[in-house]
Image (tube, rainbow, N blue to C red):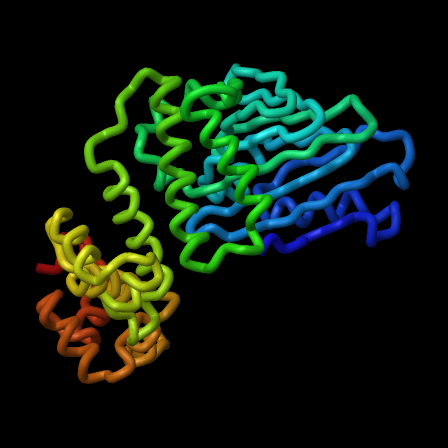
Length: 335
């Protein structure tokens, strides 16, 4: 269900702007916020969110404001997300990458968290209401070169794919209470597919063959990377989290020239090598590093590491942290 993250009506007027900036920075991206009202008690804003698998749907309403994402804020923190906004009520202007769009009710716009942008809503006192779809850039099957020129431009939402996407976003808001976790994950993937189809239409570029499967492979890879510490990370767990069969999961990895087990092993060994070679972690026991990355039994860690690298973890640490000689770089290469 949609969860209310912040409603400024519950705060004192002097706290509202700072609270909105902080919460939207955590839920979306960091921006410089300024409400375009005369008095603090005129500030009004609310944000509700719904998780759709790798996608986040946000419903926001706010009195006139300006929001700027600067190059400095991007350097400080960038989640590398695309955001697709549907204006439901009111008006706003978006500028990004030398493009600008004046948006009214029913219009769509895309912007990129990795590039500076400015958004201004108003001037109507009643404010603006938007539905925002946010997802990792890595899940967009179109190349960045095709997507970048469309950022900050108005996208057709009155016909074709744009109309379907707009209807879907509004439908998610209306029916969120009836959705199961499985429904939301599948609908998140559908929203990405429709967004990609809309951008392909506007760019005049075809969607790459197998693009959905490649995006799913990247999504699963990110899921695995975040859970390498879990010794119970198995294909069945990964498949269930993405609402696909284990058989289909194995097929995806086979088409990328690997297996689920091999992918997990390579990721774990890579993290272990990094930590063992880190001088700042020289006092951390080898067994602790192994357990940190999914090898709770020291013997299993030693066996897996030796098979992958040709050295035991202790031998690898000793060589990689040995003082460099004048004739060599002290590097260790795995097999």
